[in-house]
Image (cartoon, rainbow, N blue to C red; front, side, top):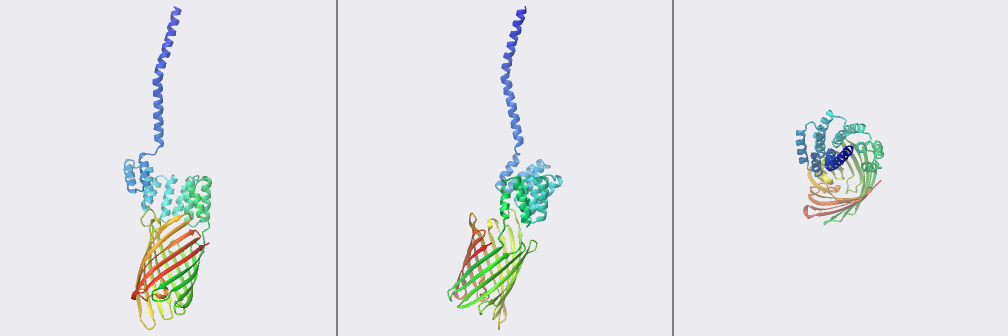
Length: 439
């Protein structure tokens, strides 16, 4: 009996082990499947939502309308999702809708003011709007919320640099590199803060070749100085050869700049005229610019107005000059200028004569530090658009252009030329060349 019981127990144990072995394979498969599903779910949790990936694609392609449509659809589904609203603010800023982006960031920060990225986004919008003080305050808040972020430090440093606070900007760029030695923005920022040239020595030569007279030649030398962010000055000396007669003059000007009001330039000149150039001159210019920023077709607009008085031996001339410069992306510019010249000669009455010009500027190429740019222009009116001893003497149409080669940040060469058709079948072919040293 005992033997039979032992045999029975042994047989049952063998059967049990066999059953366990038969069940182990399915259980193992189920266990592995469960682990796989958990891993997939965890990975999905780490991936950004589908809408975010699609919005990034649209933004990379600068397809702002599609990005906004997707965000608006998602915001309808989740109206309280601040991440969605933050993305909407970014897209508004990237697409150049700065006022709307500002309002969106401010609305987000009223609800939650603890995200440094939103403060940095608001600061960037302020900076592009020219609101320097507001931008710096927003960057200050972003850095306080996360002082270990090198990218926030570098962004704040750029704002300090743009505000003219160069020492503070340098310290902040260094702090960013301490936190992240590989931060390229901080390294580029430090390079941009290297001492900028404050002086420019430029000299050149101008030649006019006529089909009715001997050539006119001018040689000149100019010293331009930038004393501070707000003050510039220039002094120049010129020598003229006019039909075998030599003349010369000295010109000086000073410019005051203010971020809010623009620039004011005043100056004058005196010369040994020999009856071929003005005995004296006086002038002033007002200049004001507006940055539009963003990805807009128009980046900025600049306007200027000036008056210039010329006193010859036998004539007095006043010119009223106005110009508008439009700045486009990729360094393209378009300039429209108009001049009204009032000529009063001895023994005759005064007479006003108009003229105007249009100029298109564009980049031509870049190689390391070198930059090449060019321009073309057309002008029409009753003076020759720079030869001051000819104002008011004839009607003309002028076609021309020029190039500027920046060899290094401290050297450049400019060349220009034009062909002018005057009344009575007279022509003037002009060639000019100058070289500048910056130090």
